Amino acid sequence: MFTNVVRCTNCGQRNRVPQIASGTPRCGKCHRPLPWIVEAGDDDFAEVVEGSAIPAVVDFWASWCGPCRMVGPALERVAEDLAGRVKLVKIDVDRSPKLSERFAIRNIPFLMVVSGGKVAAERAGAAPAPELRGWVEQAIASAGRGNG
Figure 1 (cartoon, helix red, strand yellow):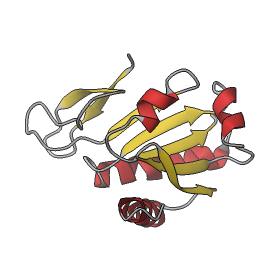
Figure 2: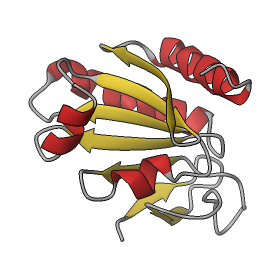
Figure 3: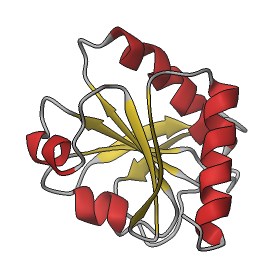
Figure 4: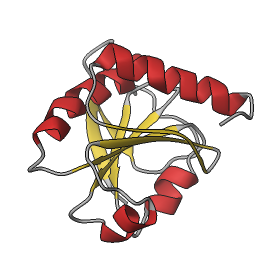
């Protein structure tokens, strides 16, 4: 199982954050929610994203894509701002051709919010963090009402 190391934005403690967990990651020192940022691919998408207990923001990207490199830090900021409420899952399209085909990914960056195993919202292109946060919050709220 893949594990990422994340620094707590509250106390600075470095914490291991698993790719899959039954709850949400919290800092081992101050117990505040941590930003949940992981990678997934063709083999573990269902478990990491569709099986997530909280909504997953899925970022389809590639290392050679300039806009993808710009949106990455904005999405990480959203994950920090919404720690405990969302899981950011990065999918490298070059390493995950089955997912790219399944979701008909034609342009990157391509973003989805998956809640309860279903796609609640999707969008293509880069945007600043405040715009992305609003989009994510709206998607979560809509999915929570059953309108996603």
